Length: 134
Image 1 (spheres, rainbow, N blue to C red):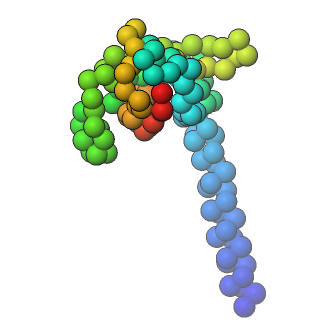
Image 2: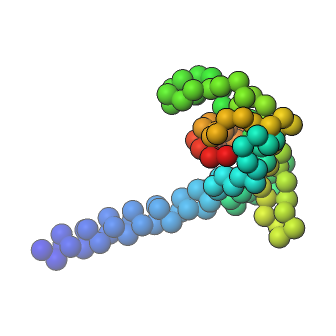
């Protein structure tokens, strides 16, 4: 009985050690916060998404764009033409936070946006779904 318990403690210790060893690797991926909208219906779109824990190297190579049609099809999401007018720009706020600014030149006449955003950097890629009510 004592040896069985000791074996389980050793296995648990090994698993915990492995998880802790992987944490630094996982913490180096760029995360995306929520979409905050600063515009309304029939106005040019103005929104932002906070970039969570980006490294300086990731920021140098980071690009954002609307996901490919194949990604929309795979997710079962419509890809209307007005989504193609959104521009994506990385910006640094005065408080040091990095954000992804989303904007259009022309007013959006759709009451909501539902889209897939693709963000890529030298070390990875993420596609995330966003929905916003205007």
